[in-house]
Length: 314
Image 1 (cartoon, rainbow, N blue to C red):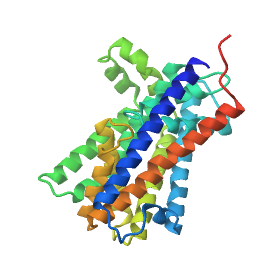
Image 2: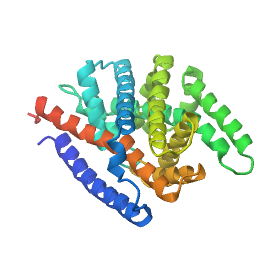
Image 3: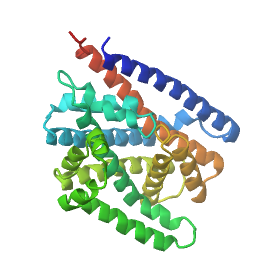
């Protein structure tokens, strides 16, 4: 077995353990706080709204995969659509890692020539920065309805800061100034020069793909709210989901586990849902937006090994 294969094998074993623990926790929470009279978690997912929500999540993965292909090509490693999407989706099998760092090695799955590690990490860094800024922008409406002192001022300041960072990420002078303060070895390990190259490559298109991708998942959240007769408009449902994703990212736990769920439950209860309904919605949304991606990633990874297995070093 190649070193990459051995590393991925260990990662998949860790993923299996994480998944079993998480599903056990989900089941425990549902048994403790769930409503025995409520429909099962799976029942809502098999509904027409659940199917459409799943389709929107698949669309989101496809849009982000296209962005990844654009950035990989910008770094001098163009890929075909089929191979690029397969490798991108396979990377989702490594999502349940702290800070989603497992996805940083996604480019190493390319065959016959894997991406250099620095390039793979650089594209990952660009993805995380653009995703975070996009989610913060989408989360602003939800922040406005959370009752805390000075909320309007916080939203305005956060909006200006996010837009300034968004604009700066496309400016050479901003990168030159920012990179001066970062040690050389850190810049080399994170591939920040290539990350800059990614973020400055066709920024209008990549930002459009990013916002459409997260907007599609936000629409999926609204569909599940509608299915359970929770009165919430599309903007607030999408914004609540984005805010929960930011909260999960700040915890740096694998795939935001714990932080994202707690945030979603809190936001849904604030919008009038009972604790049992908020928990039901949260479990269904996480199955659609996280664990569906992980399952698809595992299938893509196994398929990739079958059609183009890792080669042992000669």
